[in-house]
Amino acid sequence: MTVLPVRPDPRPSEPLSSYAARLADANGLTRSRLLLPWRHDIDIPRRELDAVASLAGLDADAAGRLTMNRYPLAIRGHGPQRRHGWRLHHAVVWICPACTVATGHTDLLWQTALMPVCLRCRCYLVQAGTAHIVQAAHPRVLELAEILRDLTETAIDQPRARAILYQLRRRCQAAAATVEAHPKDLNPGLPTIDAAAARKWDAYPSPDPGTVASLLVLFGRRLVREKRQRPAHCRRHQAGVFTPADRARLEWFLTRLRHHVTRDGLHPGHVPALLPLPTDKDAPARRPGQWLSLTRAAVALHLLITQAHDGDPNPDQTTAALGVSGIPTSLLIDGIHTRAGLREQDADLLGRSLDALLAPGLVDYRRRRDTLRAVTRLPSSTARLLPPSAGRGDTQVLAQGWIWTRFTHGPMRSSPWAHIQDRDIHDFDSRIDPETRLLLHETGQQLLADADLLTIPAAQATWAGVTRRYG
Image (cartoon, rainbow, N blue to C red):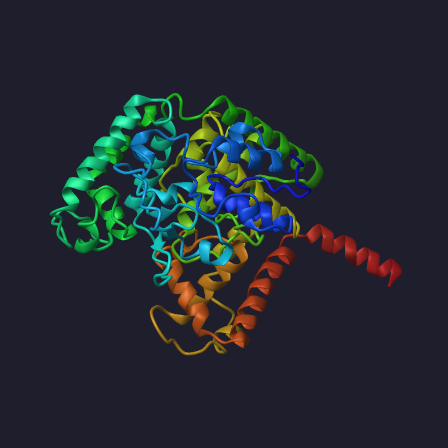
């Protein structure tokens, strides 16, 4: 079979249906030419899977990772209809209201009740065809979702992980038959349980992502508790979390960083406290409340660049340097700190974000943070032109927060006004007119330029000599 001329690489956790559509679109074909329309990323015949792999130039393992065929029955369900597992009914489609609507991005695990959130956008999924409301996910739901994602991969080879997922599904299914909309032990901030949707959990899980998220937290709290109760010296993660491929990927990424250190002068100060999202068409716009995942990624990149400079970085020192001390650690940070490995999806995010930093030219964000942190008030020429306060907070403080987030690319947590939320700055930005926005941008540029002039007396003296000699 002829290999197609344009062969995009599969994205991490991308389902076969999504990849086949991208492959067909890149080559001017219809999806049905590559994959039958009624295939739902499960029970794909070997012949059809090999045909797609051949057209895309993929090996058998890479093509198999795009389907649910590799997951055990406890996840993908039993029988031809795939009942009594974690898989949703084929008529139920969950999407991310942020990135799916904008870019078409989907995830293979979104077809199961194990993943009611988008870990990329940190928000709850919604049913296709319903209102696309972006709602930031509760931190406990996100933490549990990361654990369940790792468990699904472990369950492929380990019976214990399969047993954990099986028991969790049975507990959720049994409770869904009698659960109330507001259980007494439901954490504040979790989605309200839709009793009618919960009652539908029978052969297939409940079709409502919010209801599933709350049920998972109610009956999966033991998983989170066990993770939190590990001693501090044992938080370097269990053996088997990182594979030899992950360790090789980490070494390759360090080699790439050493190349940029030599060629472009890259150093840790070039990392902002909020890693920029890639600017390609697949990247959704950053939302208020999404700072934690991107700040963790910034800490990881800062650690890697320090290692590329032959340093021995510490996560606590790194978070202090970025001004975000006290944020919870993650598998990404711990894997880099201990040199254990770098997972594929994390390497993809760090690599594309590094490209976004390099493309416009490197910026010394550490210097910007140090400069703007010393600014206690705005120049009077700017302050008197600000609009009157129309909402929460003082206008001048909000304006300084606006300048901070725009020029340091960091969350408000890293600023001198850590009590102000990112959403308050977002609301302030939506209220001001373009002239005020331009005024604040020029003020920020001037503050940084003034600081530069104060720290280059030698250059000023040299320039004065050149002026006398050459006019």
